[in-house]
Image 1 (tube, rainbow, N blue to C red):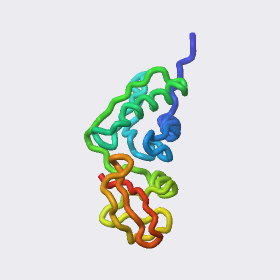
Image 2 (image 1 turned 90 degrees about the vertical axis):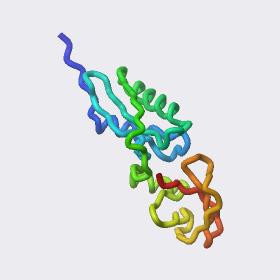
Image 3 (image 1 turned 60 degrees about the vertical axis):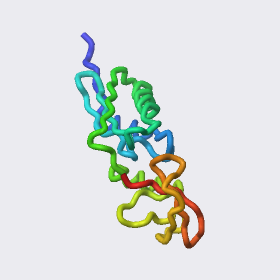
Length: 156
């Protein structure tokens, strides 16, 4: 008789996924972004629910494949990944650690009701240059104090 196989704790799996980078902003993990919405065991199958940052995000398929591969690499052979659009992803789901990582990387984290602060000098006096940045979830601003351009993460 063989001993029953133990399933890794959800907290451990979450820590594993905190090492899976977002393909568009690799300084952030899929956990930092709040893309991983739910993890649970259904028998011996790990069910992972993700919500893309927006319904047309071109990285969604890559993110799903990367999550599955990371879990398979950790020895989980049975993984079911589900994508859900409801409730829609919001920048409120970005973790505090993720917001710090964005700022340290040179991207202003999303802020509601106030202009993003310059990630280089901290000034809140900035000018919108373009609503469109290098990815659809970012825009471009310029700091009025240090004059440096910077991307900011749009609020959703």
